[in-house]
Length: 200
Image (cartoon, rainbow, N blue to C red; front, side):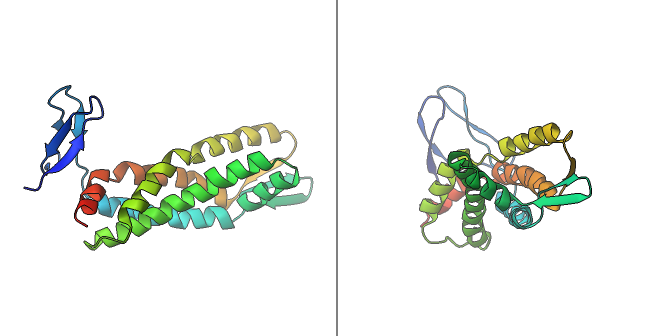
C-alpha cells in the first residue's frame, strides 16, 4: 500500500497514512483528532455538481434577476446591470466587492474544478495541477454567494411597499447555485487531489 504524509490539524504531528477504505476514518495517534475520512466516489460526484454549477452560473448571469413593477411599467435587472448601477452611483468599492465575490470568484471556482476534475475523471493529471488547486483553496473563503443572497432578500423586503417584486429566472438559478457549489465543496476529497499531485 502506498503511504502519504499527512499532518494533524490539531497538534501538527506528521503521520505516514496508507490508503483508507471507504467508511473508515484515520485518527491522530497523539491527540485523537480526525486525520482523514475518505469520501465515496468523490471525483464523479464533485464533477457532476461542478457541471451543474457551470450551467446555473451561466443562467444566473444572463437571465433577468429581478423585475420591479410600478403601475403598468415593469423594469427588469440582471446581475451585471446591478453591478453597473453601483458603479454609476459612485459606489466603486461595493461594486468591486460584488463583482469579485459574486461573479469572479465563483467563476474561478468552477473553472478550477473543471480543469482539475475532468482529467482526473479519466485518470490523467492536468498540467500545473498543484498551482490550480492551491488557487482554488486560496479563493474558496472569498466566495460569498450566501451573503449576497441574504442582502437581496433584505432589499426585496424593503422594496415590496414601493413596487411589486417579480423574481426572475436568474434569481432561482442563483439560489440553486449557492447549494450546488456548497455540495461541490463538500463532496470534493482534497486528499485524492493531493495524492494525484504526488504522482506527478
